[in-house]
Image (cartoon, rainbow, N blue to C red):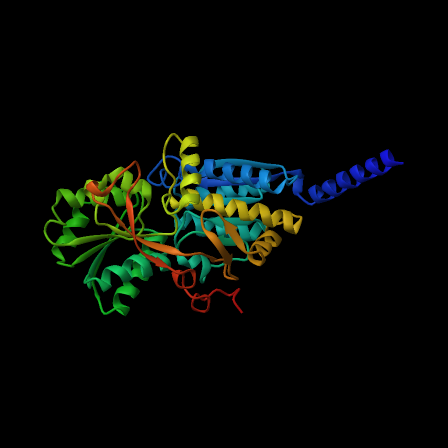
Length: 403
């Protein structure tokens, strides 16, 4: 009798697992990491985002004892919206990808968000910054996980103005991200009593910023706002040093700066930069432990906040798939909004109805070379921005999903 009961229990568990698994299309949850693998944003995300996604899958399955089968694939969108859209359609229609993650470049992200909505799949944005993704372009199938242009403008922009940087000139990456970052920062500058003296648009991934820097220099603005990212930010700052812009009395405001940018520049050139991030590897014991593990898997490179965002977003996505007992994109995104977020890298948080994930942000200053004591010891914390203040109020975004 005991053997029969034991066998019956085992059969019941197997049937329950099979029933849960049957709700997952093709029996596999397929995650597509889509980003810049080879150009100016490759260090921000690139192959490191694939590492982070795989770490999240491993950690979730181990901790939850889930029976989910999960696969991670990746592709390079080449910073072209048409290429990103084409990959997204191929992944959704042919390769049976359930969720796309990362996608730096707001132009590509906005295009992929629309494809995702049309296909009723799921999109977790960590790499793109345009706040329009949770504003006028919000979608019931997209969550914006990490940072956005409103967050960056109100973090870095506000801090710089309040410390005397009240006249600005922008060097702006000439596509959706740069335009949104300039717009949002200009609003903050003006709201705090400052003035915008001008702006110039620079082609994405240009190697020569000399003409743009000369225009900024001649404007006599106290602050040159760099509304760009990745390789463009690095080249802007390096070439500004060659022109003696900071020595001449003007300051640079890097509006979106990553750990990899500071590493590429070196502390001698990056020192004194004020920046806003939502993650720093050396913030606390939990972030240090995870980051050292990440570095051991990614050739010794320490993680950017984008890598941390990919990890966090994938963890919560898998939790929602299990809770909803389906990989239907619209239903999983709804479940992600319903469940509170909680992980070692960002702590407790939530996802709002407009798709904005909420967590604290941090205002950092880049250390002087003499202040750095060990590898990647680059930031000192100036202020913590509470979660309820770090992002645009939900009522102000214009998202049709907000009632």
